[in-house]
Every structure is written in structure tokens, then in C-alpha cells.
Amino acid sequence: MKRTLIRYKTRPDAADQNAGLIEKVFEELKAAKPAGVRYLSLRLDDDTFVHFVEAEEGSTPLPSLNAFKAFQSGIRERCVEPPLPSGVTIVGNYRMLSEN
Image 1 (cartoon, rainbow, N blue to C red):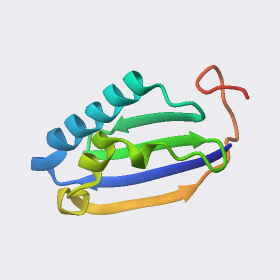
Image 2 (image 1 turned 90 degrees about the vertical axis):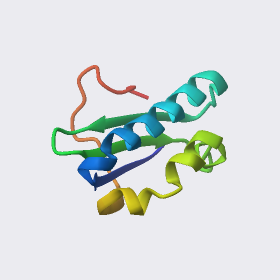
Image 3 (image 1 turned 90 degrees about the horizontal axis):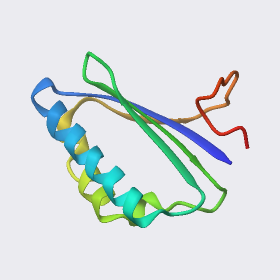
Image 4 (image 1 turned 45 degrees about the horizontal axis):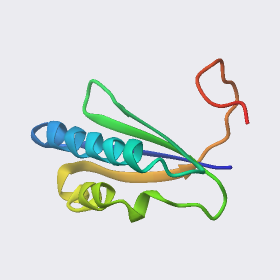
């Protein structure tokens, strides 16, 4: 499994819009039920967003979702700190993520 963490901060006036776009992504994920991907998104109190994506190697269903395309459209304009993706390694996990 490939794990990626993406962190960025939105403008205060764009944070609710950004959260709404993310909610649409999760609605489409729940409807489509793509295999091989796990996805978590968090909004911090300062309008920083953190996304954690866990996907099987070679499996990238998110970019093909219409809601994800809508979310990505204009993301840089909504941000004061642009998205910074980085690979991550889980050091500890208690009942939060799959143990696979």
C-alpha cells in the first residue's frame, strides 16, 4: 500500500467551500465503492486541511471521480498555503486504520 499525506491551508473565506467539495468526493466514493483505496480528510481549526490516502500500488481511483476533479479545480486559488503531498510511514496505529 502506498500512503500519502497532503496538507494545505485555505483562505478563511474559502474553507467552507473547500469542505463542501470534499464532502462531494466522499459521497461519490461511497456510491462508487472503488476497491484498493482508503481516504481520510480532516479540517483543522485554522482552516488547514489534511488528507490521508492509502492506495494499492497502481490503483488511483480518486482522479477519475467527477467530484474529485471539481475539488481539484481552483484548489490553488482557495489556498494561502498550497497542497504539499508527501509519502508517510505509520509509526503507531490503534484502531484508527486498517492493520493490513
